[in-house]
Amino acid sequence: MKPRILSKPLLITALILPLVLFQGIPEQIPDFVNAFYLGVPGTVWATSGWFVLMILLSWHFGKSNTDYLGEDQA
Amino acid sequence: MIPSSIIYFFITIAITLGITVWAARRSSSKEALYTASSGISGNKNGLAIAGDFMSAGTVLGIVGLYFMVGVDVSLYFIAPIAGLGLGLALIVGPLRRFGRFTLGDVVELRLNDSRMRIVLGICTITISIINLVAQMVGAGGLISIVFGLNFESAVIIVGTLMTIYVAFGGMLAATWVQIIKAVFLVGSVILLSILCVVHAGGMGELYAMAAEANTNSRSLFNFGNLDLGLYSSASLTLGLMLGMMAMPHLLIRFFTVPDEASAQRSLVVAITLIGLTMGLVFLIISPMGVAIIGSDPAYRDASGAILGGSNMITLHLARALGGELFFGIMSAIAFSTILAVVAGLTISISSASAHDMVKSLYKSALSEKAELRIFRGAAAATSAIAIGLAILFKHENLTFLIVMGSSVAASTTFPLLAMAIYWRGLTPNGAIVGGAIGLLSSVGLIILSPAFWVKVLGFEEAVFPSDYPALISVPLAFGSAWLTSKVSNSAPAQKVAESNLSG
Image (cartoon, rainbow over all chains, first blue to last red):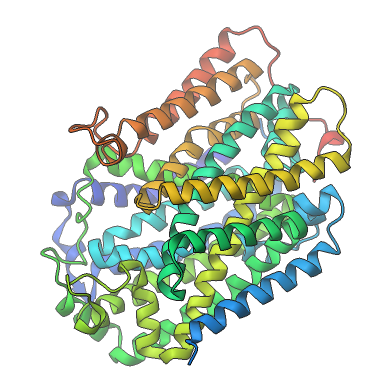
């Protein structure tokens, strides 16, 4: 697999890793994650930020993938 | 007076059947029935994919699960959305270029071996049947509560309607039902979210109301309520991520667009719509469900449980904030969601049966007319089997069934597609062994898990300690395919000539 292709799954894996750790070892979560900001829980802010990031990333992937349309990528 | 939900129930059936009649006049060929003649635009296909993702189980189930475990529910839609992102980065473009009707086309083109169709056909049918049973079990429960029918009648109605849609209207009918439903679903979620914020008086007030109404011992807003542990958390995430990018009923949607660029465009549109809609469901509707429905004894039965179960919270909320009219509309959307998703799953099973399985096993050339007869027969058979299995498994946990389908997809179709697309060293024998090991290990570990071994079979202690096999079965599938390819003598994958590409 070419490095330019491998970088995308690695980036997504890195983005989802904190959620895996939060769910797997919740006792290790820092206090600021569970605090409230402007009346809204920190966990909710974090999840909202993740949604926005994922949508922006998909727009970026959709645009950058067109650079190598038609190539056999093996 | 007839309840509004019943009126909307019949309106939904009339509209979807009308679409089927319209589509049937345009669906006489194999191309039309399997892939809507690849004439769907990227934006419309994006709506249809979003509709496929946002099934009744996803939207209603997320709100119901939030009521019990709070923000932990985020894993159940964040991991699949990440999977769609991975699909966009890795699978969708090459899949559209190599394939025409089914996943079997993709692997066969690369490995030039007709046995690949049988392997992919078995995987597609297994995964889609598991998902279909999950959807039918959810449909039976929901329809029996909302429309007052018994479970068996509900699944028979859904099974009959899905056979009609698929056998006559094919992919064109299933796609348009999905598009219309997606538009109404997104619109209703936005409207319900606005009603929630207006009712609460702001986001801070909304979360304060939810925190006050929460009856669980732990906070809804802290992670850890699912008590997964690190292995199960990682394995569940892996299964949901990789499973989502390998679901046959979603992947065959990329054959309905004209080219690779449209396929990518459709997934960008889908991720945007899913992200926005699920964001509203998670951030606004779910906590408001806890605040209003959880705190009102009128929505509880004698035992203290939510009327109709926690999956009904969204519909109760629609009635509380928008009245009978909005409740009726939301119920109809939930019903059309079920119909659209089961139709898509039936198409993936029927096309895999007719185009991959029978065609490969039947040595002489199969005419298009005969293949279409098999496609329609497979749709009817799938419906009968799904009705029977849904009645048999009607008390089974829905989340378990959905995760099971996802884990099997992550362990079978994902390794086969990823290796066929990206590794020139894959051999036909490697693909067969990898697919078989992935299927057997994922299904085997699920059978040995607490959710099946203890809760279904009644044993005291599970042989395998987790309900989530992907962290073991996915590496096993990749490893066995790699090892067999290295030691076997069969011809490796070949570079696909431009003249062989369909996109």
